[in-house]
Amino acid sequence: MLQIIDIPALESEGPRSQATLAYEVIRSDILNGRHLPERKLKIQELAVELDVSPGAVREALSRLVPEQLVVSRDQRGFVVAPLSIADLIDLTDLRCEIEAVALRRSVERADRDWEANILAAEHRLRGQVVVIGTDEPKLNPAWVQTHAAFHTALVSACGSRRLLALHAQLYEQSERYRGLSLHVEAPRNVSDEHSDIVKMALARDAENLIRTTIEHLRKTTALIVAAASKEAIVPSA
Amino acid sequence: MLQIIDIPALESEGPRSQATLAYEVIRSDILNGRHLPERKLKIQELAVELDVSPGAVREALSRLVPEQLVVSRDQRGFVVAPLSIADLIDLTDLRCEIEAVALRRSVERADRDWEANILAAEHRLRGQVVVIGTDEPKLNPAWVQTHAAFHTALVSACGSRRLLALHAQLYEQSERYRGLSLHVEAPRNVSDEHSDIVKMALARDAENLIRTTIEHLRKTTALIVAAASKEAIVPSA
DNA sequence: CGAAGAAAAAAAATATATTGCTTATGAAAA
DNA sequence: TTTTCATAAGCAATATATTTTTTTTCTTCG
Image (cartoon, rainbow over all chains, first blue to last red; front, side, top):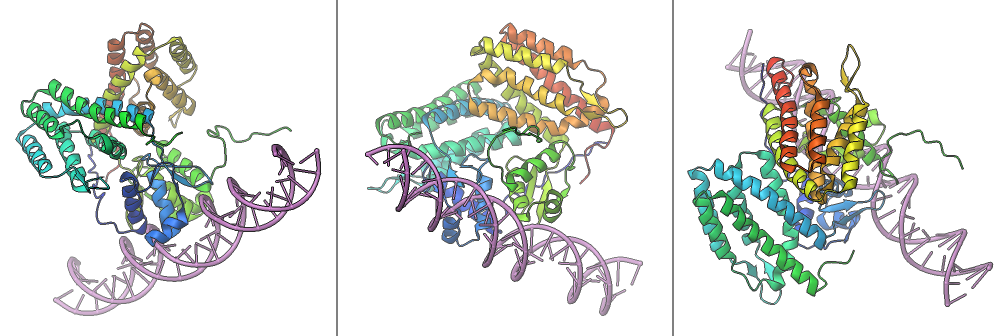
């Protein structure tokens, strides 16, 4: 007899435990660049800063290891996972492959809801400014979230939980690199690229949608690589 | 000085913390089916069983959450991640996609070392029996390891660290399901399937290699699904 | 007899103390 | 001046005790 088990998806209900709270704060701090790569994450320091017990910090850091946001060395604590150009290129390559698979499936299974969500996400994106702060330029957190939602909407019809999770994970990891492209953001019209993507999606033209999206990803990576070549942004190994 | 090595399969050198030890033991117990899906993992119980402190167990379990081997519910502890037919199908689909990408790249970048490693891995595989134990049939752990090495060898030339890591992770997750196909292993000649794969690899015939490998994966999945339909293998919620 | 509420037991989460590893600093010898 | 060894300090890792939360059971009332 076949028994289908419903997987309880109560992954996110308010941060109730201290460890979960610490996890979310530290994770966000790493993604936003508040903790720089290679920086040592001292447990006691974080514990007093977040006002939680050292055990909670320790657990939070442990959870970040499989996500590749921090690396741990037994008996020697935790450091923020390093960034490198080589890793960025590797990451981008993999993202392009995954994106292609997810988009192709999404188009195959597309329906009107899918189209509606894409249109809505793009519309929200247009209402956001990308960079805030004049002297100290920073990515607008609201834009970051909306942008993620836009790209998620495009692949949301792919019909695979795991593929969606993988897509989200890779997107998130690339977020760490995005902040580095701020200084050379000039020669680019991101809105046009997005509307091209939307056009292809609505036309259900899978191959051109994939091509356009991959170009979009590679353009960002190319800018970061160019920036890193000029300035010594990425710490040396 | 003579060193007596009594612990086999010590993978990485260096100091191992209790938490790391607990992590490895629990992980292996889940993968080998010693902890059944949906089973509650009581911290204190595991702590006395492994002779480590509860904190270490807690940390170990936390590290298994992102690997999707256990799920945690804040304030209510940890349980072994459930298995389901739907998830197996989802997992297999994703594996086929990833396998295709990795194999295509491997063939592109193939060299003589790659061929040699594949041949060596297949040869080792032939020397192993799949199932041990007569009345209580169990997968031969040596075969399991050799089989993993064989499939890793095929994609090892893909040139992407992340792709290799992803491949390994998906393979590992599917290992949890493999034990379920034991009872219906009959109508199959796995060695022939493997030698077909080797033939395609040495011929550098990427598309046929992919096709053959995907068939290989899907066959295993189909057997497990068939087994689950007849017997109530998958535990009930 | 069944349902609801309260109390007790069990287990998770947290805090604090202790141990032990790693590394840095300094002194002594080459 | 450089190298090496020893000692000390800092911090990760672990153990233990305490608090909080959840679950189960027992009692009481409908």
